Image (cartoon, rainbow over all chains, first blue to last red; front, side, top):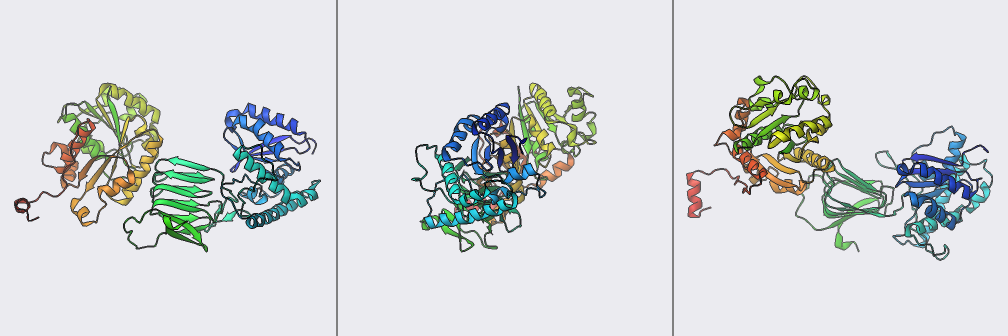
Length: 319
Length: 264
């Protein structure tokens, strides 16, 4: 393994996957990433980076430093930090090909936003499921690596750490100490979901940002955002809006809306006029009752999941 | 320097070719120099609707490929001064022309004519991209049914993403009686979904069928209501303020009398 490359860039559908040689000095690595980015500045601009640090133990400040000193000038953003699952597979040419969604299942360390505070019991619950998933993938792929046992025992603590890092990255606040800061929004799902159509939906997708889309989403158009999505216009029949979090339509929703596309069952859809072709929340699909005349406009409405079914309520009843 | 318009719909059979022929003829009747360009290569129709089929020697593809001069391929309409047609090739396919070539062609025509009106083929593939390539403004035409409105919406989305800021809308073949009964989408419903500016509403009119088969645009027929609607559209395109026509069926003497007396 001594001859292995220090930095490997791979494009995935989740973003840019960057594998670091965990035996190399961090400063050397940073320099190598920088020179790599220098050469391909335009190509990578705006990408989200999944940083694979292998067996390295980076602390909050080190990761923040990589983001600020190396990635930010090139318009890149660390999306999450993972431990070697893909790098191991790549370097060792694992016999099983990497399936889409494997990234999500193997690690729960994600850029978690803190836009919604959660109860602490919920947090620990999701951490537990997360570390379990990590354990599984690591035992499959990374057994030969030294220092693994430490990492396994440590994974829960480390996860909290990375969560904290991600939160800081998002807020751009460098002054807070990890201990005093509240945990970000937990990832309540522990792997890729399978939608009812059997299609594999990308795994945990914590809500990070809100996208404001100005204009009408017309037939054949699709607007997707991993965070929350606000449409300042209508969504026409044949149009599709998808978000990892909530969807707000400041107009008429006549097409298809999918909130919580990563599996977040707490996501909701709000529309001033709710006349959808179909509504999806997480992996539940609903459509308006058949043969029912749509009556006069009933005011803004919201759709959310309750006991596994999509319910529609007038907006003023949701508080 | 003239203006180029593309008439498009997504769905077939909603009246693109009829609208192209009639709006073009109406503009020519207003003393404008007009050329109609049939972009429906392989399925040409505009020449038939215009009654000029037997005068085609060269076509659009011949011009683009350099087999003839642009002037040679243009067919002059004898009924009205200033109206010309650039026919499509029938033996070729949409891929015989590229959007860049269309852009050049329309650019050349704009130097010569006041209005260049491009008749777009149905669909959203290369034929569509060719037809919209050189256009300054787009007119989307739909009939009052859900599938046609859906396709119009799709096309408006494509037009907007290729830089057309405000496409104009024509609602064709509306039947006022059916709208009154609630059996047909009304203009309000359509505008609610499509949310673009309306430039005209054309009532269903049997005269259109007759005129299409005869190769005589309905605008030449003074008594056709559809012809009147197309003339109004042409005036609005010229920037005139023209009120939308009253679509209610023309009532008989008795009806008008009852209305006058106040029974209705």
